[in-house]
Image: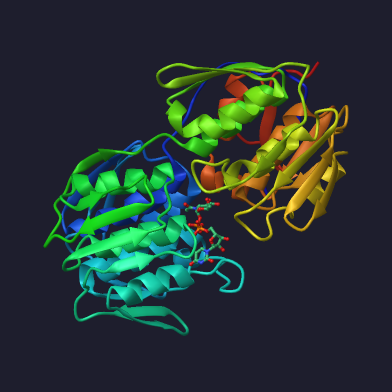
Length: 429
Ligand code: UD1
């Protein structure tokens, strides 16, 4: 069982380069299968979720070669439309994108239930309604099976601006007959990136990034070469890391426009954030102010940054409030922060934070991907040593987090029960 151990209270300094966007890549890698051709994808993050997607695609007889750590060559000319018995599908939620892709290309899809998918808690009803509106018959018994004689474009209004449903409907609609309009569409950067990628393969998608996306179906798509955008949430996490350690970090390979809600909130509480072309310079301060944060779909403050900002607020004197409006149950990790000495009460969708002077290192768990990042931030700020278990969650979405933080001067290591794995941290003290 691997763990991350951090000796905290070292201000981070230097430059860090952000990897390709996880949430764009987990859509674009499956979307490459729509082309019945060869696709080259660059700036693909080297994370566990991508390794898992590659495994699923190989099970479907797709030929996937890694040209280098961040470039995939995907040849789907001889693939099949069935990943119903794949264990790898069950490991991650984003494998739901195979539904839209297989339905679009083959008009028949057999897919295992995506990982962690509980229809009560993380439903895909909006995806299913969209596929049905396009003409598919959908059965969700032991597996998800969808069939359509043909897909025909139509107007689809989403009850909620769901990222996954917006992208999945786009994936199915690019090869449908006629025009599909998705209204109340999600506007996240990864929705736009997926649309741009589809257009690079010959699709006709307009309006991505607004709440109405218009997809004119085409007969076929062709191969392309495409580079994925930088990861908004990884960038935001390093911004928080600089702020929480009173550091001075240049975060490179970012799109500052995607970071506006995070930058604005950090400036509001007193952190210096300076944007350059593809770089954000974040300098922490000892005098920070409490605030209120409400998570919202893009361009609002991202729910995937909620655990990270909550850790920062837990160290700012005064009362802060964080309102989670996207997910029903996203404060489970707060219990772990309390072990470190944070003073946080949760009432339904709202966390009320009374800032404390200091967190004290102890053993905590990563309860999910972004909660895991929050534990790392807490460990960077805490006095003494913090040990984080369940680090496989962090590996799902952060490329080389231990290495990147080490290069910024953090005293952090990844260990097994047998001893250090990758790096010998600088001496504490
Ligand atoms: C994506 C992100 C995830 C992020 C979330 C919100 C990926 C791979 N994951 O997840 O990191 O936290 O967006 O920004 O991109 N909902 C329904 N029915 C549906 C679909 C969603 O009720 O069919 C609800 C969900 O329960 C949730 C809300 O809509 O309350 C947002 O979900 P959605 O935007 O679909 O999130 P994901 O695409 O799963």
